[in-house]
Image (cartoon, rainbow, N blue to C red; front, side):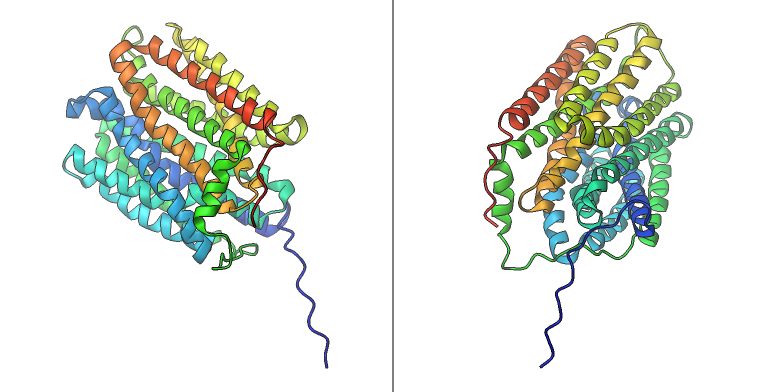
Length: 411
């Protein structure tokens, strides 16, 4: 009888320099661009939207929070769907449906209907944030996942920049609806690029009925102090980031700056510093230690926040850049580690991280707005500094002190 065929060797993952590696990285960059351009474009039109509709800053910020809440609610369901149909298939469905919904948002006649469609767009967009890092961890060699995750986050960043820079100036010239429509068209082009170049998956293994149940995969992450620390970092740091970028525009268009809204939109170019930081931080983590890089990023964030107390515009601009560098030194590292350090249910582990940072963006982006409306800019900055200090404490305890007390995987 012929000998049984040998089992195929374990999947090693693509490495940098291979054509499929490049296609994956570019495709994920485009997917991140399409996703985050359509999430945060509303952030640049908040003053115009609030003025036209006669609503306070915290209410206007709900147009951003509605989308991020939709994402937060959908990341775990999308992760489960992707376990069945595949990461690439889930991201394709997500991008196509979200783009169609996003194109309808500017046509909505009332503020309430705009919020509803923004929320539905967030629900549809959830696949890319939920599973992108897990997809990279499956398709790429482990030594390149952190670098590729940094590139993916850079796509998120540049998408956020483009969405704001397109929507902001257009909102002052032709109205905020036209500004949002233009970003939706831009997102459609990026989504089409993803559909065209993403390669066939090689490392995906379909989750069958014999695997650990979904509830086990989720609850296991919530017993792991390391994963909980990563989730706390995403929740607090990206919540802080959302607060600064939501309300700095209101601050600069009022006393003592009186900066025109079209020029305020240009401040979102500070996001470019985050693009560079996200690429560098992934490489530094392997050499200096991931905890050190994350704590260092938080320290840089606090330094930038201290500069934002100033009434001198050049120092405020520098402070925004410094703050952005700090945030995107810590956040991409934590995001990548949520997949790399997961001991069970990688898709659920990364989805919970996305749920955490999106939840932080939505909650703090609105709640700290109440502080801004009621107590002003100084109280807002003090609140954000407190959030950063709590994040540093969570990282030090969960990763540094309890890192060797992780539970054993039941799989």
